[in-house]
Image (cartoon, rainbow, N blue to C red; front, side, top):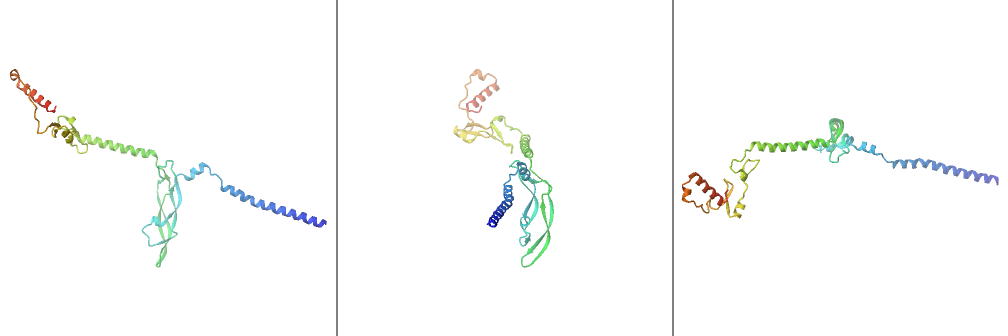
Length: 242
C-alpha cells in the first residue's frame, strides 16, 4: 500500500515538472512575439527614410531596353540609387554625383549561345540631396528679372508715337506700331468715321463744318491770320475734332 502511494506521489511530481518545463520553453516565444510589435522611434524612422543612397534592385532591361534578344542572369542587379523622402513634398531626392560600376552578367541568346560578359550600370553612391526652396526662389527671381529686362528693352527700342496727340494712340511694345484707341465700331455707333491718320472721329464724307461763324466787316478789317485761326478752330469744334 505504501509502495502504491509512493508511486502516485512521484508520478504527480513528474507531471508537474514536465508542465513547468513546457511553460518555460514557451516563454521565449511570447517575448519574441512582443519584439515583433516593438515601436520604432521617430528619429530612427526619420533617419532611415530621409533622402540618401539606398541599395535598390534594378531590372537590367530597364537599363538596357534595346537588348531584347537576350535573357540576363540574374535579371536584376543591386545598385546604389537615391531614394527616400525630402522635408518638402514638392522636392525630389536627386543625386549630387554619379559613377559607373561594372558587373559580370550572363547573357543568354535562346537556342544559340550563352556567355558571361561585363555590363556597366549607373550608381548614385556619392550622395543625394533635396534641392532647397531657396534655389527655386532664385530661379523664380531670375524669371521675373528676365521679364522685367524684356519689357525694359521694348521701351528702349520703341520710340514714342510721332503723332501730335499721342493720347489718342496706343503703341504695341513688340512691334512698336502705333494704332488708334478709337475703333470703327465706336465711330459707327456715333454715325461718324475714323480718321486713321489723326485717330479722331469725323463726320462721314470728310471734315465739313456745319456752319461758319459770322464775321462782320469790322472783323474783315482785322488781322487775317487771327481770323483764319478763329474760323479754323470753330470749324474743328463743331466737327468734334477738338
